[in-house]
Image (tube, rainbow, N blue to C red; front, side):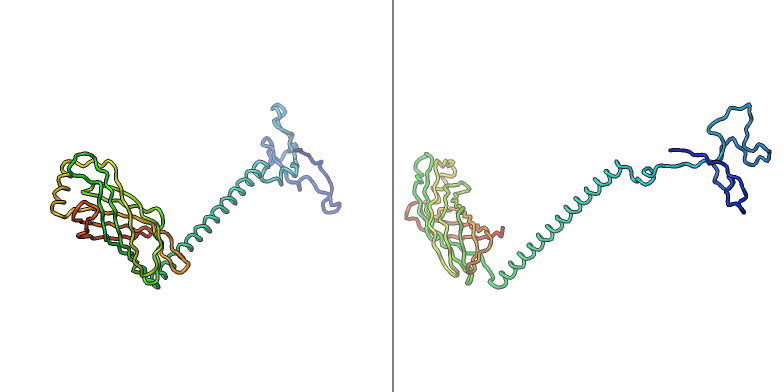
Amino acid sequence: MTVEKPQEMTGDTNSGGYVTHKDVHRIKHPSIDTNDSSSSRYSVDSQKPRIGPPPGTYIINLPKDQIYRVPPPENARRYENLSRRKTNQSNCRRCFCHFLAALLILLFLAALAVGILYLVYQPHKPRFSVSGVSVTGINLTSSSPLSPVIGIKVRSQNVNEKLGLIYEKGNEADVFYGGIKLGNGKFTAFKQPADNVTVIVTVLKGSSIQLTSSSRKELTESQKKGKVPFGLRMKAPVQFKVGEVTTWTMTVTVDCKIKVDKLTASATVITENCDTGLSLL
């Protein structure tokens, strides 16, 4: 920064066009009394030390780069980084909004398709019943552990007139007596056309089943009465099929209460009652 003190210019402003220093903007020094009418207008007491630059009018020149460089370089870089960060955040927010909108649209279309499928085809869950049971490996005259082998014949009925069923792999079946699991197994995956009845045969096996003395006594008494109760539980993944189109995989659960007359391979089913459930997920 440079400070220039202009020279006083005299002359008649009306005739010569000169500019007197009275017409120039002054920077007043605090030690100068500008209202003093004495002849030494800009003089100060000679006994007092002079403080600061001599009195007069000054012109201050600033470099252009200090005037127009706003903001400074470090602030400009910070502003640029902040602007870029805001742009990235805006892009991420926009992408998330688009994804959420697309997901909502897909869910709406899926719900609409399910609604149309239900109204047009009116799907119903299948029905199950137990038509045969054979029992081996249960000896109640000994206290040794049991290794039962129980054959189950299940009748599956597809009551839908327009929808086929596809029973996939991953199914399971368990047989119980008084809350004690006697055996477990699987049945073969199969396809069932509309309005069809299919008989499923599976063998459920157990190993080293230890019955309590009370359970063994109750089982013996039930066989003497000719009414031995069993529980059968099955679970299978299934899909509905319309032409070449299949739905997503659902889950069928079957809980049956069975009574047989004896614990032999030629046992007869006296009563049975199966409750079927269908989970959409």
